[in-house]
Amino acid sequence: MGSGHLQFASWDGERLKSLVEAPHAHGTMLMYDYDLNRVLALLHEAGINRVDLEHSNHGGYHGVMMLGRKI
Image (cartoon, rainbow, N blue to C red; front, side, top):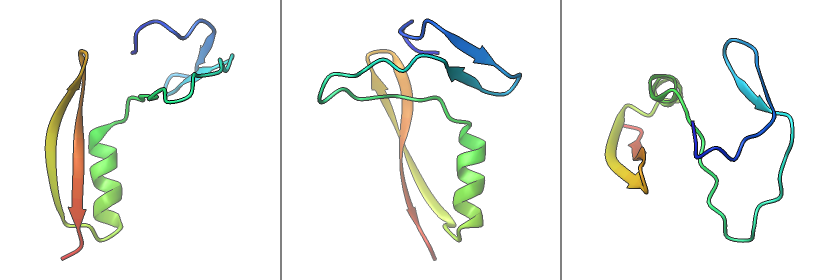
């Protein structure tokens, strides 16, 4: 999870849902966790069969930038 900004949440066994939405300062980058396998499957289902991934690290938050193409 993130850096501890979430104070009140519910967990249904699959998803963590915030119960309190805090306002964010203008220009704040919001980051979310996604199942990369699910994202790639959705891209494939949409006909995007070529995907290039580039690793990113934003202050300890690891992720990827994805570029896809229908071929």
